[in-house]
Length: 368
Ligand SMILES: Cc1cc2nc3c(=O)[nH]c(=O)nc-3n(C[C@H](O)[C@H](O)[C@H](O)COP(=O)(O)OP(=O)(O)OC[C@H]3O[C@@H](n4cnc5c(N)ncnc54)[C@H](O)[C@@H]3O)c2cc1C
Image (tube, rainbow, N blue to C red; front, top):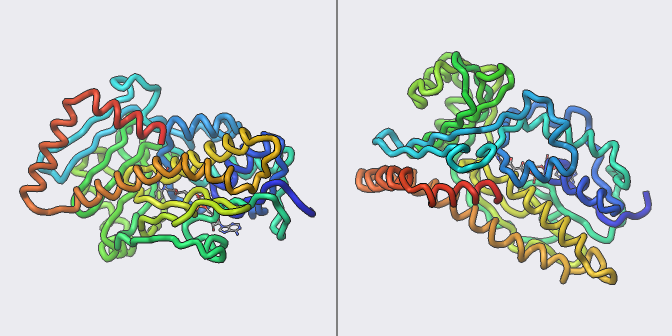
């Protein structure tokens, strides 16, 4: 292949969604060749919002997902650290179809890679290719971003997120549950895989040492720790396979674009997974960049920095706001002092009774 309009580096969900979106505009796009089953071992499940779902539907990827790889969340129950504070969100009260959809990460990547194989104007090629615009979607450790000399301000949380799949002895009922347990955050996301209507994807963020101990523990010890942390609220939970850990950090690139290049997804910004928003933000980048490129003046080149800055300006606010929200929540719930605990639990109880603010929070999370 000699040259293309857009070369996308990276093989994750953001790179492939963008490739599909731009190819649909008739742009000639190059994406890397991905080995079959590249993401098969990913134990994560993503909580995706309505905007992400709409984008994936428009790319004809959403409907290609197996039925048991997507589970709608109708209700969400959030608890503080056991001193009474709780928050409940309901899709019915908010007047939305679902609060989020839990999507099997490996199946999402598989569906994106399959769609890319059949998309017109899209070439899968691992060699170097000349392009008017190069998009860096290489994830948080992007080598091309590093080579460009773009600073990536990173703060490690000293935490690891433990992910696993669980079987429960009772139906999940479309309810997602989350516990802010200072200092750990435990989330049980309903997913119809591996067991229809009664299994969960677990994301448990813990101080690194405790997380390593839980990753090394035998199944029975892990399940016991989980039973204590969840208080049996979701029934008896059993591991349905392996566990894996992800070190957690907050990070953002000092610049999002320059002449002929632009950053998207985790290569541009990383947030703590406690609000399940990292990929939602990345898919928000995809939608914004695709629209900015589609609306460019006919004489303007795809690599024109003036054009790319429109994208950077549009994404600055939502990505910064989400980083501040997740970081703020993490710090608020990590405070062990009794007074802070008391205030926090009262705050949650107050918020729980204040429908307009809850509606506002939900709509923000649905459109990030
Ligand atoms: C435990 C956990 C739970 C999460 N849960 C949620 C959630 O519920 N909801 C949500 O929205 N987000 C969630 N996230 C965040 C989400 O995983 C990321 O935001 C998302 O994966 C970012 O996608 P990406 O494509 O930008 O980067 P990545 O997923 O990191 O993909 C980039 C890929 O490109 C590859 N690559 C790098 N360089 C090259 C190259 N030159 N050529 C080819 N390939 C290359 C990398 O190896 C990597 O596989 C979670 C994260 C964690 C850690």
